[in-house]
Amino acid sequence: NNQSKLYNQGYRPWCKKPSEGVWRRLEDVPSLGFSSTWGGEPSGGGTGFSIRWRHQARRGGGTTYFAFCTPLSYTENQDLVEELEELFGPGINSWEDPYRPLRRLSMAMADHWVPRSG
Image (cartoon, rainbow, N blue to C red; front, top):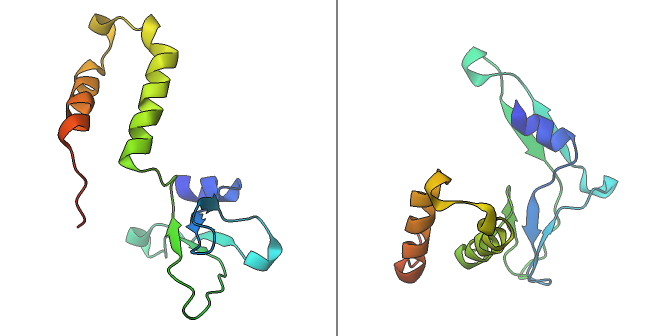
């Protein structure tokens, strides 16, 4: 299982606490009690992949968020794509670029797309 390999090599979920207001990866400290297990394929009677950790929440302290991949907004993703295009763009011939239709769609969406909840 690729997820178990990723977490066994030190990857951690992301956390945004109300007191900090920024996303950070969960720390690799013993008090967190982080563990990941692979119990075999569920289709074969196994329990699948699970991760566990401890988190203390204070009553009335606000909402704490967790994410299992890098939590970037649409705008942050577009900024990253723009930065990568600046780095690698000049060497790419548009007629040889297999992702050209996707790039054009992305640029068109940037002007009109508004994220919706749900």
